[in-house]
Length: 155
Image (tube, rainbow, N blue to C red; front, side, top):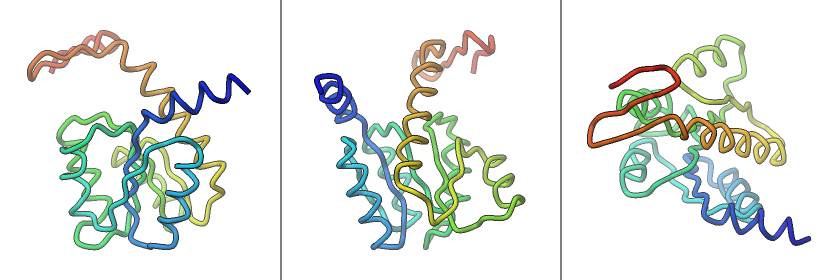
């Protein structure tokens, strides 16, 4: 029990941005993740994602590929062009192998096809957060310089 409380407290500081245009799906996902201890912000249009990311520090982005006003693919391209390492999980109805490959090659951290189980979504978020925190130990930043000590790259 004490371990569960510590885990929930730790996750309360974890903030997730949900970009989903279907209100009923978004409410289900948001409610589930909030019960799981996350802080969740929801936007329903693609052109709202980048301003939200600029205003808040998110630990993970759940991104629908078929958003209005700016497709999820375009949002992800812009995020990656900014060299942002934010974990992005595509949540989408596009389920062909070529769709999955394309989404991952665009820079998605993971790809989940709708309809999906909410427990699986939580597990995939936890995996991305673990990966993010493991990798953050070897990234050093100063002003506009980023040193990746594992890849031995300075950008």
